[in-house]
Length: 228
Image (tube, rainbow, N blue to C red; front, top):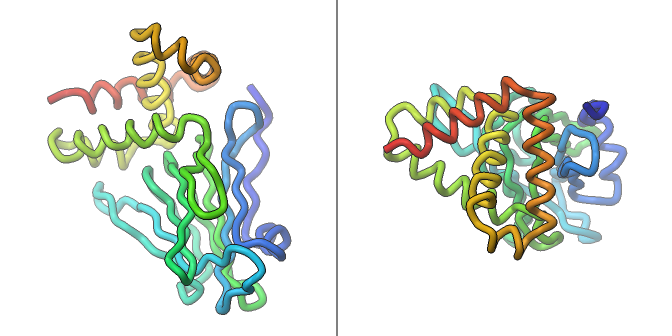
């Protein structure tokens, strides 16, 4: 199993974001985890780069998903968990950059007048396009998977609370189980996207070997999402 590198905290974010508004390490399978997204929320835009002013993401309260926002004015320090779904950073012109996440931990601090926020996760965090970036491989599949989960939240009793209680790696395993099952059933998909197929097949083996409990929990989550 690859060595895990500790996620950076707000003090490290303050160093790395001296000349940037945000940085991301998606933790795709070609590098060790964890995945992280660090964001600088300044009182005034620098006008030298993309200047985030708002972060929108999801948390779970009482087993229900709740939209949550952070700005420069949010009370700090912050130590909390965040849930699965979309993370969106927005600037003063309402231009955004977006990410898809399986959940994790968010840390925040105010340092020298700037609020620094770091989202970190044991599971990958995929770029979903925006002003300053493209799409990570697999982001379209993940967006479609989350769409199917939202249907399950609406129609399957108890599923939302079950997803909220799940570990991020279990949610990731549910996604990998979904993708590999679809690709195994479709020679056309395997032919059209051979690189992605090899990658998710490798991830399936890694999860089964290194995180068997998360893999089992993930396959059970996927089965619950399909139950009607």
